[in-house]
Length: 286
Length: 302
Picture 1 (tube, rainbow over the protein chains, first blue to last red):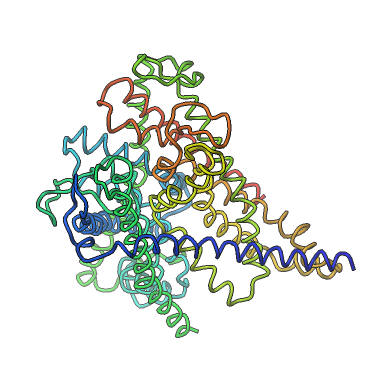
Picture 2 (cartoon, rainbow over the protein chains, first blue to last red; picture 1 turned 45 degrees about the horizontal axis):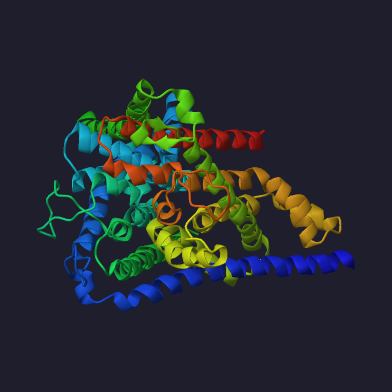
């Protein structure tokens, strides 16, 4: 009897933990959005930032966030997917494969501030770019790379071997098989992976402070790759830490709410359709 | 891999030439990408390492690693405070996060009904997606004022930093542990129930011990995230280069000291090099965590 009572108590305890975790998240979101959403207005979202007076906006930072995200994905997706395809489809069991695999793991564990210092050393100091969007995007792509490699390898491995055999039996080369059979059937997984990477890149700040800088171009939105490009996350940190504007707290709260809304939207817009697509495709194949 | 070599089934040679060329070209591009990944990590170690080791021209390793006196204006470059600070803050964060995360993992893997799981999984994914500066801001607006009231200090210090880190690493530990518990062979659980054990007894005596290597992997991954986090911690820790004597004391860790001083230091100076050396220490600690995970995984296979 005693052990039954303990069991019931334990079940209640685990429910408590589960609910507590959910509660923390809901409280977190409620707090960020509750504090920040009242500050969101068109003038704030699209307006120019101010250095000294109240009422500055985050328009250029919003633009830079997506511009840097786009560029970093542009640089990292080809190589990330390429290395992932190689690991899944070509790699034999030898020292070189082990080396690539452990390099990917090592790259995934590098703290983002170390990427930031590396990017600063390479792009700002050695190449002499200064703080630029290009340097920021290239360094940011190093953060994306290992996740893309892992996701690509895992999703390709999940494609049944019979697909490869059927394609090979039709006389397709390996590249044709990869392009026309494997990549399309792995697409939902790849899209989910890219969303994951995009969310992380969008929120990243430690890398960009040292590579893309904490100022925005005077001609925002500026497509110039060699302009400095402060993003939303960096701006949030910067106005709190070193900003001189009197309404720094409001700007920080508004920026935080905007960031969370963007991350939420990214999850809903891309992750959910891809999950549905996955369900539909697995439904068809069974 | 499992596919037989296609070059054997070549049909008409003229028709095949272009395809075969493409096939070879792509193979080289794929290998090239793989080589690039390896090149990047080794050049990071090399670049950051080389710049960091330059510190030892002016500062003895003994001073850097074993002195707590960090005052660059007086040529004192002891980084022990930051190294210890990193481990103290991480340890407190783990103490807070691990019980909650492992409990949550057990709940999601074995106890929660399906609908609850459907809510919790995207919820924990969202936790991961929230930018670290946003965590920092919440720490600044909620936990710092709270601890200011409780301790009667400025509120900045080890405790708010550890709480923020605990919330940040919770989903990492939770999802890896849940995976470890869910993928245990069903026979273990069934055998335990067949012996008349209750669910709690099964969880405590069978499932958790069997899933320990997986849970440990999750904890180490969370630890890595906590050690490397910079911005969120910098916003709440107080940034004072002194060893904390209590949880309410402001201090500095490796990452926050770099964020704090790097923008104001000139490239090539001893201070600047010492900051690079700190980031090398961070890098090496993170890389050794990967090795530990590999060892844990190997023991699981054996």
